[in-house]
Image 1: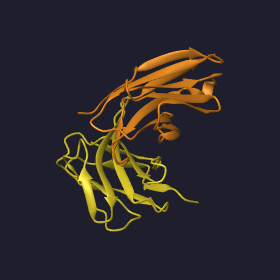
Image 2: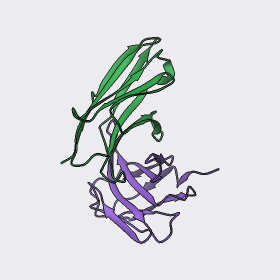
Image 3: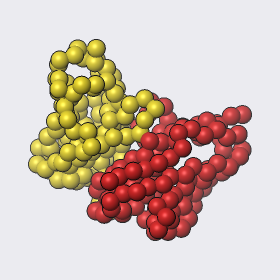
Image 4: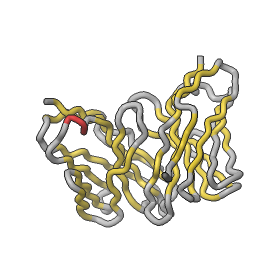
Length: 112
Length: 110
């Protein structure tokens, strides 16, 4: 079955620690995205990558970093510089044929 | 600049019809998507409009007017399971960068 996986579903960290959220897809999509969603809010773009070894900042990239060493993988690191990291994080990929975005199940990060 | 507006909340009755509006002002435009998102879950694709007009898919229809920067999602024969947030999203000229609206939380009452 093709799809996007994110792990873990729930993640708890202490303030001041970096944490990496994983995102893997086997849809053979070139483009991948990371979004943040706060309660009752829409999705805000953190980073996106249109091809391996290339990525661009979205609207709220400060305090986050990404890498794209493989087509299938687009991990997101939430650094200690992110002032308010507690949120629901969604990874997505898109097909150039249909432009539709496919979403992973999300990771809910809680930092205390 | 990028700006997408949707009503924050709507309420409708089971079996009724509801229209959720979306207006957008973006620096580029390739197409408009509607997604459904149940609480705590990932968004799922509902519809995609690239040309003006109405796209119908079962109980769901989506309309686009590019000259007015306006779209709506029409849900017919509402069911309790339609209670969710509905997200409007616009893609840029290359179809790669997505901008999402704040979402409309729909409550379907018996």
